[in-house]
Image (tube, rainbow, N blue to C red; front, side, top):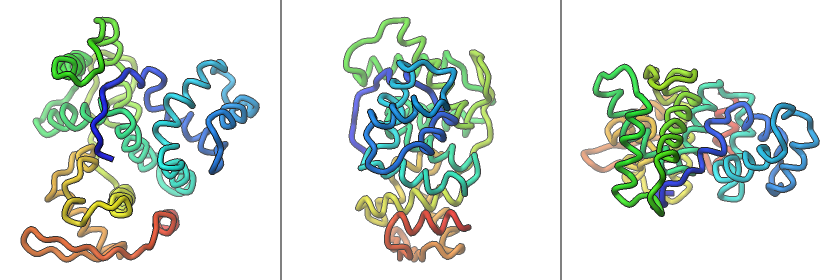
Length: 262
């Protein structure tokens, strides 16, 4: 999950797409191809204000890279949890999957949003995002240098996407107010178990970069894990720098069922 990939402009196909994603998840079934999903979405009549071309772009360039990776596991899990978790919890999971699919967003959240949040700043502007994008280009994180127009647009995509997922205030503006944001217990449980089943060891799990999307360093993650232990979702033993976790659920589907019932 932590592979290094270049920054792209893929966010231009759609920012958070929270409502659209929920509708597509409702239409999607396991094993369905992007072509089949596009056809079903087109025929459903549930996207009356979106052109067929834009709908295809949303599915191929946004929905699929975020939710149909790993044989559709993210889509499968979200579909199970959609009607059970709160809107903010679903948005947090969408944020996680979108940051994985778009490294530029993940790095922006980790490096800029949380730095400003913890520094006591009240706003993040498109100029802040622009400075981040330009640093990334200078550091060779894009396949080629971007034009001024592309830099400006991507900067707006970054802040707009953060607004869609509840990290910044919504609305069309050049500077957005930072919104208080904290990982929910259900999302913490999901991420911990997902990393575990991906083969990440207990100690390495605490330092995984995915936690940084939620502003959590190793010690913060350990505290979250301890809270999950109190809820009976797992058992944790921590002594010095060694952590051992006993995982109570045998697979992600079992965990999702428990989260959906809690």
